[in-house]
Each structure stands twice: as C-alpha cells, then as structure tokens.
Length: 284
Image (tube, rainbow, N blue to C red; front, side, top):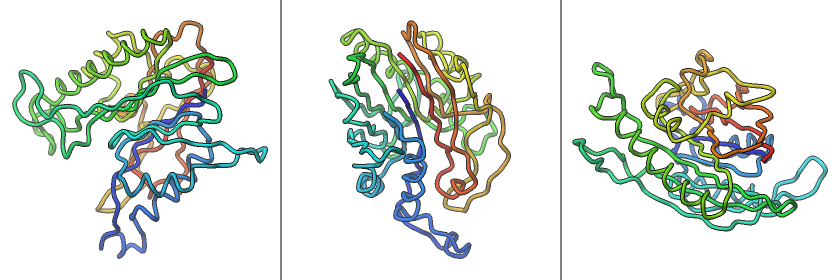
C-alpha cells in the first residue's frame, strides 16, 4: 500500500502580502499544486490535515478520477473528517468502516483550551484490499499546536501534556478498530511534536513505531516543514528528522515491510504549504 500524509495549510483567500510578491495563496492557486503533488505519487490512501471545505471541493474535482502511468483510472473517494479527512482509491480498496472525532477543547487536569477553531481531530478508515482481501486501518490526525517551552512566542502551559492526551485518545480508537478487523494500523498526520517529545514517547509506549525507522530503502532525513503562511514563504534549511512534526507510524504490522520513507520537497511546492507531503509504501 502506498500511503501519504499532508498538512495542506488551511487558507482559502489570497492576501495583500502575497499579491505584492506576485504570488497567490488562495485555495484555487494552491490546490493545483497539492493535486500535482498527489498525482505525482498516486497514493492508495491519503491522510490530510488543515483542509477547508473550499479546498476539498477543488481537490476532489481533479482527484475523483486520476490517471495512472499506464493510462488506467484511479478512482478516489473522499471520507469526510472535518479538517482531517481521508482520500482513498476505491478501485483498489473497499471501505469497511470510517469515523471522525473532534478533540475536546478541555483536557482533564489542564487549564485553557487545546483545540483552536475546532481544527484538531482525527478521521479513520478500515480498508480491505480488493485483490488480496488483506485489511488495515488508517487514521489521519492533527494535534494541538502550541509550545510547552516557557519563553516561546507560542507558549501555553500544558501543551505537551495535551498532545500526549490526544494521541492516547487516537491510539485507543485505533485499538478498537484493529481488534474488530484483526488488522494492523497506520497512524499519520501533523502531531506538532518532534521525535523526542512526550507525545511521541506516549505513542511508542502504546506500540506505535515510526515507518522512518523501519524503512528498508530510501529514508528521508529532513524536517519536512518550512516557512509558508500569510506573511509569505521561503525554502529555509532542510533540518533533520529529529525536528519533524509530521509522522507516519505503524502498529501490529507483523511481517509488514516498509519499503521506503520519502517526502516531496521540490522547490515548486514551497509556496503550496508549510508541510511537505510524506509518503511510504508498506507491504502488509
């Protein structure tokens, strides 16, 4: 299975800063780049984050029936999941079950809100390969974004604990789905947490493993995100994987083989989103 994750940057309209640069950050302009990236990879399942209603409509108008290199059609279906939807190839996969959950603003034991604008959520799907009958579950999630480091411009006390709480909720739901269908699971998305964080420690304690660490072939070592927002964009330095906040993790994979872990980081994508798409191929 070829699996991809991408935070699209939820932005529907162009602004004066981008116009002054001779650029366009509207949904109409950027979705063209998003679709270009997705068609370059042609994933079997695509987990997304920060997707507006406008962006999803434009995307699916072009993705509903895409063409494979041999000219055959890849028919994509949309699973509605708020800001964290899933797109999958219904010509290859049968959807057994799907669901959506919006994280509560309140986190037990912590003060304040930990869901800005109802953007933090998860969406999952349980799939069956039409050719082999093999099953797997996949979840796309977006976790709380602020920093737990005092002095940070985006500091909010308890942010690390909030992300750990949210990933436990996501993992618990995946437990139920994987048990129901006796299948492995893939958890992907924008965790807003680096490799050495409480959030990732919590995920690893629950049995989740980074596909980056399991890849038998190509393995991208970059950070995977760069400046791109209302104030403009720049390429920035590539950084290291230890700084990455977008992750793809697998659990109960058994004999599954992770063939590679890659990112689409071509310069033309710099103006599309602050998150480069990451993708992997797994043989379950």
